[in-house]
Length: 140
Length: 109
Image (tube, rainbow over all chains, first blue to last red; front, side, top):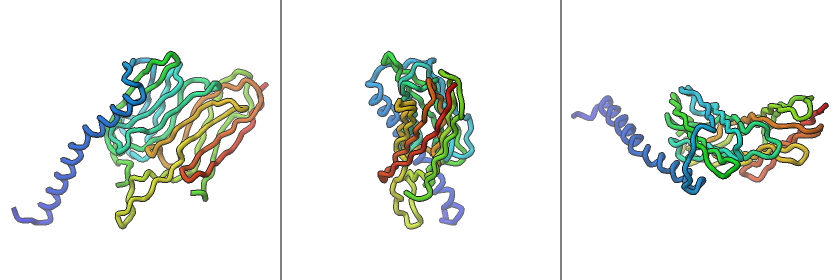
């Protein structure tokens, strides 16, 4: 194959794709590690926490997300496709009404957003949502 | 980033005792993630707000730990209970040690 500009482009895009594929599991396990660190390996319940995120985000730089977990003392957000999985931790004080909060986050690529709520009795609840990102928010 | 940081907060002016009110906060801040590179390929150092707290008459409402994955101009919306008239205090903590704060009074009937 002659090294024309077109061929070079094809080659380089394939290379980028391969790198992206290869690094995904690494990110996912980073998230799992972070979750285990938070929960101490406790089993994660489901149902008592709601995570609202858009199915498709056109701009990964600002993705609106909302978490709601009645009876939670703290909620932590993770994004498993970001270079650093931790996103934010909300700790609720005595004057917090509903245990809910919304904010805007950065997502590097299409990925799962995971919310872990620590309940008053010390148990943990998990919710996740897949967000498709059209333009990544890492500015690389 | 000590310049150009402007906190904006929306709190209702009046409420009934024990009511749940919705609070919206936004602060202008570039939230440099530490992942980006400049034109010469050098990493731009991280510079973000790493903590945000909201208190009412000295009692905590919400305490948020922020990571670089929070968007530029961090925005938060949450709900609080107001037992009596008083003042909300909102505080943002910058990586460079700066602390920005603002407060809002609320009349409870």
